[in-house]
Image 1 (cartoon, rainbow, N blue to C red):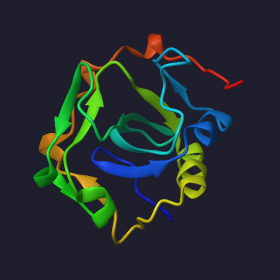
Image 2 (tube, one colour):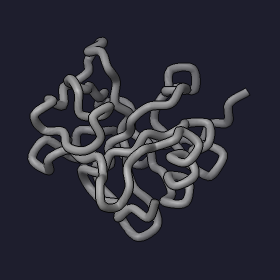
Image 3 (spheres, one colour):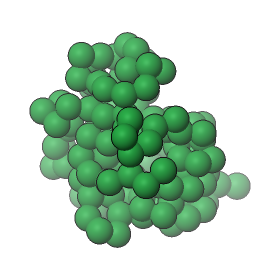
Amino acid sequence: MAHTYGPGLVLHMYPDELLRFGASHTAEPDEAVAAQHYFLCISADDKGAFWTPLYLTRGQDRLPIQEADKRGHGRWTRGTSFYSADELWHIPHKAAQRGAQAAGDKSGPKDENRVDLAAVPKRDIFPSDSALRTHARA
């Protein structure tokens, strides 16, 4: 499962595993996603990437990713997904690998889950890097 991390990549990941391997996020500890979720990569460098969790329901202040903008595994592509511009995660690539393995992500380098680049939210709508915090779950 050697993915090329960059905008538009979507992985099904387990947040506790992400946190265990050095991820940080902008949400309050009790408001951050805890269960397995799809995460959308919005930007990356050679050590880590910025990701936002994707939800099945609109919720307060959530913005849509339309079904027509999604590619990959059928479980991922069905329906609209939603993200919150308030929740940003910085995830080292090693943590993303571990989080995806723990969640049983079904994608691979030749059949990646993706969002069309035109539909990927811009980094500047999310909180600044200074808002990232490392939170351990109790």
